[in-house]
Length: 303
Image 1 (tube, one colour):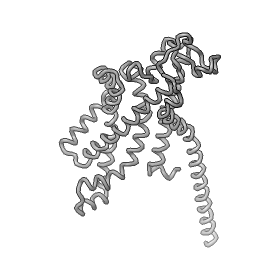
Image 2 (tube, helix red, strand yellow):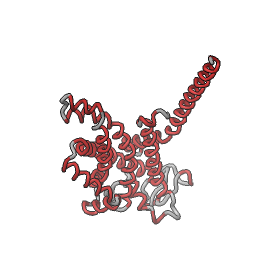
Image 3 (cartoon, one colour):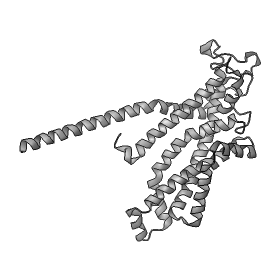
Image 4 (cartoon, one colour):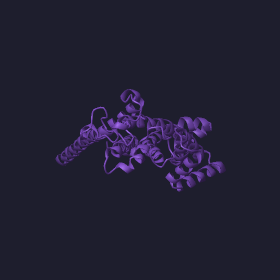
């Protein structure tokens, strides 16, 4: 009996050690996989902040004698490392300054939508009532609308400007936070620690600030991270459709729409901003997925 018990204990210990080693190996592989997209996102932020230093030229300056010049790796000159467009503007300078426009939009829209949506979601989930129901019915209606058509309609009404793009995306994106935070609060308000706080005489404001907000903070951070590539692509889409930033501002979407007629004989004009947009959007999604797995307590034990 003792021999059998010892054998079972040894097998259990071996299985535990094997599981621990597998978790360590899985964590290391996951960190290695997320490193490249993390570097892309860091580069995006650096390019956006230091655009004037990295590409000090004027993104709107034309060089008519150097129209559609190829990139340096395809037979071009080092003066224009990524080539020029149909009016001789330096694509490298425009791509870098386009990153600044996208970063400005993200830096305002994502925190602003998170703040407004969280407040609405917490109010609707905690207090409810007729006001909360009306707010959530509005959220349902907006989420049911085709997002890009809704944004284009607002852009056509308000006009093309960076301020209007930010306003449109704020109106568009806050509903995601409101819906998810409300669902979290509806679950949390039935938990024992919240009921105990109510029984102890805690005010609604104190409970929302001290009990609910810390418990939904991880959800807010994950949504914000996942919304970054969505906002970047949305801003580029509005610029591509002509209802985004004004024409004089270099944006990735504007560069792509201007390059459509030159794709067959000057591929770099569309490929350079398109590649930048694809890399940033894909990297943002990968980093967001990684952060969700890291902060989700149900998945934390896997890594």
